[in-house]
Amino acid sequence: MLFQEVIGQNSIKEKIIHTVLNDRISHAQLFHGKLGAGTFAMALALSRFVFCSSKTKTDSCGTCPSCLKINSLTHPDLHFSFPVQLLKNRETADDFIALWREMILANPYSNEQDWYAKNDNENKKGIIGVKESESVFKKLNMKSYEGGYKICIFWLAENMNTPSANKLLKLIEEPPDRTLLFLVAEDIQQILPTILSRTQVVKFNTLSEKEMVETMVRTNEVTQDKAIEIASYVNGDYSLALNEIAKKESANVFFDMFVQWMRLCFKKDVAGAVSFSADAQKLGKEKQKAFLLFVLNIFQKSLVGSHLGMDAVKTSETYKDFIQKFMPYIHERNIESLHTEMSEAHYHIDRNANSKILFLDLSFTLFKLIKK
Ligand SMILES: [Zn+2]
Image 1 (cartoon, rainbow, N blue to C red):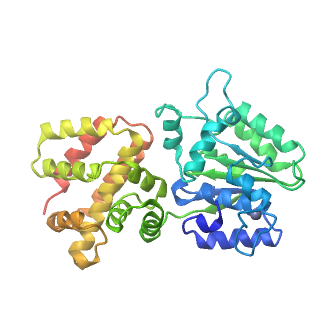
Image 2: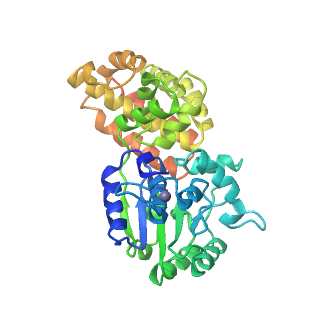
Image 3: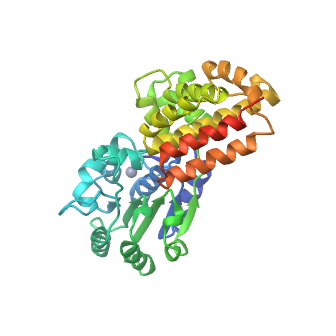
């Protein structure tokens, strides 16, 4: 990963490049935001830049011995710590590193769900346990192989349990010589406040639709129209965009589901709502969350359409046709309630609410809210 390969986030790039070139890099940093916003990609590009022996003022060279080792994620002074699904005698990142490396090499924007899918177990959450922190502690307390910095990137640091986090805190408070700790976290509330107060937090905003469309078209062989369609509902998360591209079926599952849902809501069709909730349950947690964001996005676009005209709606032609017919039903009298309902549902799904009951409830609320 070179800085130029990290999508967008230019002001963050400039700032961190500046700290390295002026030898003012802070030893513990937390990149906060979605993996799909490029938090890990940035940590990796930064590590490469620190190690690169022929860096320019804007990026690593990509060809020096250090850069070549980073290309294969095998630089001996760059360590990775990440959540694992604990198994007997397999409790540290080292036990899973080959699989994780394979995923990251294929896609540095991989997310937590991709990782569990890679382990053939999408429903078990991984943790960064105490055995893992002990292993990191040991590695960072050894001398560096190449005489320079030692770096550890914590991928999804919020998955540390408390004993593990306390061990990390010790590392942050009394860092071994020339050691850099880069924490990457999506949910900052799960990080110990004592760690937060001792790290430099860098907040990553989600990517713009424009940045994602350009990258998708340039690097993934998708058409402009398809890229616009995907960007319109993944909420600035490039990991989700890549997952959408990877799906071979061209019909958009979310869009079809949405249309079906709205139809049954207009008709106040209770039996339809029951079967819809059962279908929604089958999606699984991550897709349910993405679906709700998709729905919210169509609501917002409909409001834009009715206020500013269809020319102001940035989306694909298929969606435009639908939005044109749908927009009279979304207006200032219901948009706020709709927004609240969708956001709350998203929140509860994230905290493992029963999704079937949740979608049924939500359908009944929409019966009342969606009208001209
Ligand atoms: Zn280099």
